[in-house]
Image (cartoon, rainbow, N blue to C red; front, side, top):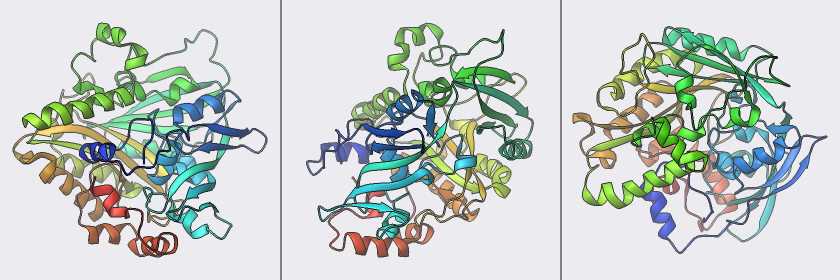
Length: 442
């Protein structure tokens, strides 16, 4: 499929291979918000529209999506077909839980409308995490929530992984909290970050802006309270792609960031530039042949979240051979940042979990080079070990990055029998590429 925006999956060679293919369906014009119903709180939107478009249109009428993934150019269709998580997921679950119905172009050329209540309910339940294996999403009807102009942000430090997980779980139980996420700094503890809608900041309080300066990721190293416009809160992580932009020389310097401006300090710009450098410079010259990019999201049961942090750091030695660090005064300088985002489990067929049970999503982004990474991503020793750890601990890896498990194991983990039934029903001749092939081949 061709779309106009940068891909937010992290499979560089696969993305480039698809871009060069002539066998793509052009859906790049399916980018519009069609209708917003403020009374019933739903929105009709075309599937290739980005969350930047979605939030701009909904915020203009005092509403917001139930869940907004943290990067601007993720598409709404991509967040359904590939699952999406945001800081309101502790209450609303994955992004696709807000889906009411979807128009889908099937391999036969027919367009069907699938919902939980009609004759295509089996397809509706199988859409999340299917990555387009059953058809192409065209239009989505999504639930909205009422929103306020401002968000009150609170940051509270916890001095251990156990304290951090307990702090996040406690925040999720508070009725006046609308957003919850956090950042672990290695095994030294981490910051619980909560947000609540407010109409206006208190008198005398300044409205904070992040992006050009200071980067949001640097602000999370200090406890405190601040007020942001809601749209700025939503995109707080985007300007630096969380903290991934550290790998670009100069982006820690205020002058360079000022020269770049808001037009260049965006996740899609970082992603496009990084993919181009990897494909056109590093790989042709063999400069990254022993570098392994570890860009993974793993969803773990809440009861094993603190244990996961400790075991993760043993499997992924970023503190020793990684590029990305965050330094909090009083802690060692080699602390490794890990994003934590509580999320309710889903009943979707292809993401087997306990529905409504609280899980913890862990997001991690780094490039490592050392004795353990010989052969780089082609071999994927660290990524493979991380996937194995996730499975062993009862977790589920999200599928936006490279996948190293064998096909048989993949179908076992992600309910392959259910996938086969739906695939046979809606694409019996296999005209569309299969699920595992979409994740592993160009």
